[in-house]
Length: 282
Image (cartoon, rainbow, N blue to C red; front, top):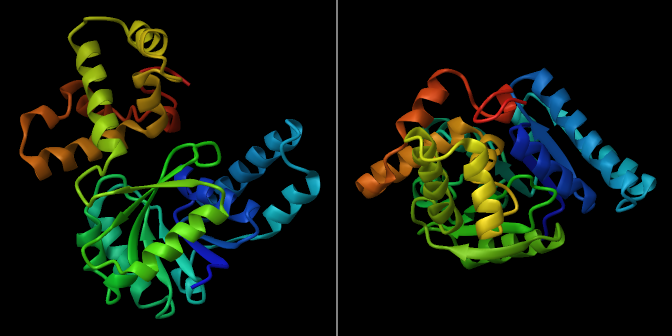
């Protein structure tokens, strides 16, 4: 199946990033969110990102304008009825994703592929919420989507070869690279990354080093591009906590327990960059 039209559910950081890379690849995109202001903010983010590429001479003004024309927005899931692929990029909450998938299943055409951008939840379980589980796949993008080259593909127990092949071709079309991960909580990358971020929070909580020194240590001592606490702020502390909770419940292993400081910061509303305050102020 050739993918020419893409629906994206969620206009937040991941959703608008996926919309941007699809549009710059020449695909028609329909971005859906329940709030009109979220859609406006998402489109503005895309515009700003494309403008930066123009200023860096990585994109022509004509290509910028063409990409923007390909991005449509709506608050109605029903407007996705004719897309070839729909990518769910809602919040990392299992109940929310299951509800969306059930709704999408009754809207999109029978041959359409449904994908989830989940970073930790079982693809097999999400696929079971659809009447076409063979046409369901995990498609995990990384933040910031326009910059990060990787897309992690995860097959559920029900995913068929045609769906996997179509997903690989789509990722190639948007000029990203795939790796394959088993359907296990956190898949491959986050299974390694997220516990490291959580451990950095423990190090801060125990007063072993300051946030600045923890990040500087990992950048200069381990050659990381960004420190773990700054990265946690970028990802969103609520998202980080959700993933750790999935790990903890899935593996029943105390090494995955969320750092108490992480939980307390989320309870305080300190979500990182998106709230203006996390381990750093923005």
